[in-house]
Image (cartoon, rainbow, N blue to C red; front, top):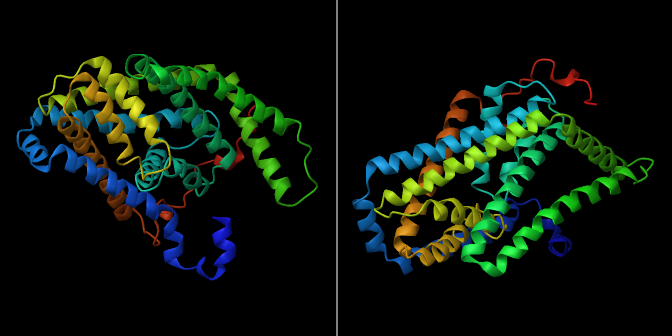
Length: 340
């Protein structure tokens, strides 16, 4: 990337150049999804959708939407323990960043809520600490679920997943120690980076004195996983497939973790491919798996589109998604004392 910038400095300002980094990811997503549809059989998929059971489909969609709304509350309770912030306003910001996340690789869009909150006067160190803790707890929990599932489906991968837990905790402690004993440079960008990391870690580790909030967040994370399990359980039944709860609770988690690898936009194609391979071990046909995932994927993009349309209608957009939220600072938001 840096080499390209050095070789072609005149293209950096062009719109087409700025779109190139994610262009190949969109292409990969399109190729993978097209190949899956072709291998499953377009006619077979069409017949499945024509025979869909509306009650189960609606149930799956409602459960799916509920997961994301509860997810916004889960981050908010952590942020609220650091700085007062209106729940309704946070939900709008969370859903906007989530919608953006469907257009970007990995978790880049999801993390954009930190930038949106900055526009509302929330220090990035505070919002970043709340986001990082929520994402860290969720990731550790889902790694455990994935490891349990891997012992049944992918024995060779199970040991690696279990090893990720102590490795992740060790890495967090190591980074903290490095920043703690890193002597602050006199001035310049390194000094600002040092101050930012120090402030972030200060707020992050302050949660050790807020165990009730952390336990509530973890409890809600478990509840969201239960909703996700029931969501896929209902989605498969919408196409007449009686999938087991163990498979519905573990395989989607494994495929979602695979989708975190930033090789495709929002994991499109990667998630479905891994799900197809794993559910086939349960004797479920490729077309039935793909139909279930395709239905949920379509309704997620529908929700994202509705969210962005609502926010555009509610606010005066200035030309980009990143400024759809009003520049209203939360009351007394900038005067909160540093947590001890």
